[in-house]
Length: 202
Length: 296
Image (cartoon, rainbow over all chains, first blue to last red; front, side):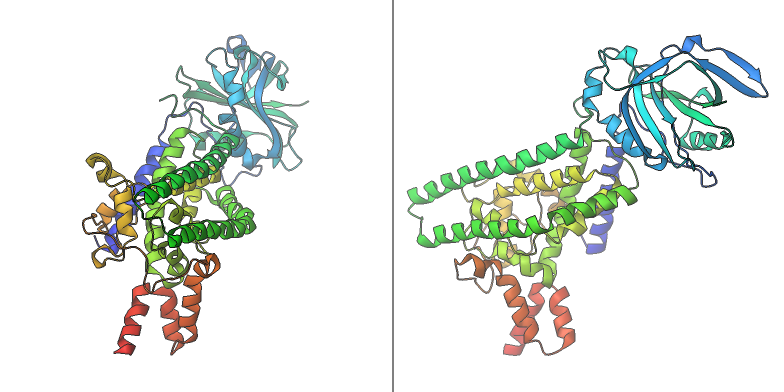
């Protein structure tokens, strides 16, 4: 085979093997890293689950769907970092063998909580984790007190772009307590639907 | 399937890499002793063989000294590319590691082929080929720039989203696999293995100076790359090892710098800057052909 043909075949093989690596089934996969260019504060996907989803109440108010979440305690990986580096935290979460070994039942969802935003919204304290009722024990927990949220994305299958664009709907003029992304999981730990919520301060 | 997608941490992968690196050297030294006993039984154990083998291990020491100096920079480049330019995020799983090993082996094929086709690169790789013997110790016979060229061939893997520790692990796996190929003790392995994998037989051909074997069998783990790209040769005639001109020394420093000493002599004596440039980029056989023409 001539050199040019050999290089071409090499490229095809490399892309094929890379594709196989990309297509592997993953227990939980980060949805976000894409961000819309036009968004002032950087946007990311949030993931979280809620053990007591059933308790939420919804009321229509000024065309905004409001959702109440009961107190939720999650455990996973937490870091204060630029929001555009959230993928690093996902990597840590996905490889957190200690956390996975403490799972006592299949988690219904993965939660991503953004809070303590910096003034320019470029940095936040981010936690990616499971509800502690799926864990045998939990060391570093993050408690989300019962609160009312505005729902930016309803619970259904969303693309990365959907989630990134939903961040544009946040009213950055208001004080933001936290943003919560919930990724609901199937029996095989695949994400079946997602939801994006924001909790504003007074 | 669960095993293949079991999530690993970066620490797990680093530990695995160090474990393989360290313990494989111990295993290789054990196999080397067995080889030497075999030569002794066959009454082929000579002073030159032991001198050459010891020199090989000293070149390994010299190489490791250089690697220690540049290791942080080398790994840092991978992390810089991975952190800033990666296209995708691949999870740290055995599945990813296996894919990375296949791609690293393909990258190794091209790196190895480049080492044989570029004058500057050959000056370091010729050290590995310069031994007139063929045993496990030859696998550790390194040249001074052996650390430099892999960078360019493996870096695309970081761009593709493979974690740098996985890439380094894959590099180590490709290297240690080949270490075992440097032996005359194993003749031929079962046909299915010879068909797919690089074997001692295939690698003896690669180290040969026989005309029909020149520039053949560049593979690391999978010989299928050579078969696919037309660089495969089967071991048939008796193999003669080494390079031309012979490096008739067991002095490890002479051996270690032999390639670049020769290249610098050629550059110094070159008739023009164009000639010097060609010495650096053209295959080593080009310089040999020019010398033959001048003699003629």
